[in-house]
Amino acid sequence: MITYPWPPLPETDLDRLQADILDALDGAWANAQEERAKILALKDTAPRVPYRRALERVDRFEYAIQAFQDTVDQQAQNYVDLISGRYGAGAMQMAGWVASGKLVWGNMDEYALASLASDSYDDFLRMSQEAGRTSKLFANKVRSAAARTVWTQATNETATHAARRFWKELEALNIGVITYRNGAQYPAKAYAEMAARTKGAVAFNYGALDVARSESVTHMEVVDGPSCGWESHNSTDYANGSIRTIEECREYPLSHPNCRRAFLPLSATMQRIVSEAEAAEAAEALGEEYETELFIPALERYKETLRKVA
Image 1 (cartoon, rainbow, N blue to C red):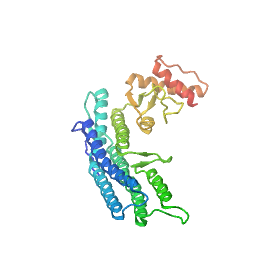
Image 2: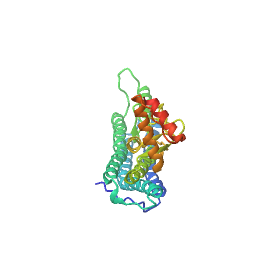
Image 3: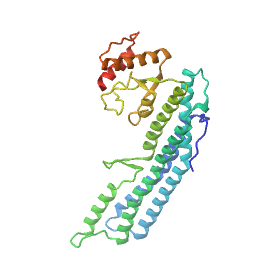
Image 4: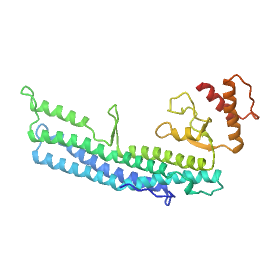
């Protein structure tokens, strides 16, 4: 059962915790890949492979996969603690900006963290499920071939030709923790690192946004890559320098995996000016005249965004 700390105060070095999780997964996955390599080494004895030897190596391979799955289960709670810690870190940073460092957790939305923790936990366990699925396909194919001893599937095909075809198929049958639509597979550490970085960034931003909202901040200025879009990386609605509502920011805390998006709170004066700009846009739509008090670059970028959307 998944649990998460509340309040989610980071009680340890989060970067060290993340590194420990990745190292544990990487070590267990490397063992599984090593056992797979030993099975493929039987190719040197083709076209005949000793039946018992093949089955013995497949058994060891499956033990290694099970050990990896056990490691995923063991690290899942640490992963949730990591995500929760990132949320807390984001909240505390924003509190230093908008609340003089005073963070009242009772004003925070605990459900937001609970939902994020549950989603992160399920995403993490996908590694175990996919590793089990792809390894089962691999093991079953080896067992089927080993049981025949001589790999031939047609009466007009020699054992040597059948063996070559079999090894070609087996070498193409990779094992992975995540398989994408194009068939590409992520190794454990690469996927876990991407997931930890992305989910951690989402959690950090949620923590920051929740504190800002609790302090009546209504708009944020977005800090992002110069070519990064708002809804997706390739969107022409560019994120960097734009001003968005808290609700918009919560809807798109990032635009893509490994995104570096962050948010800066607007001052009370700037929030008032933005509200005036919104009123001006509404008045303009009605054919009325409405002038704001100040010219501020961020405000102009915001108005330009409105013009693009219109």
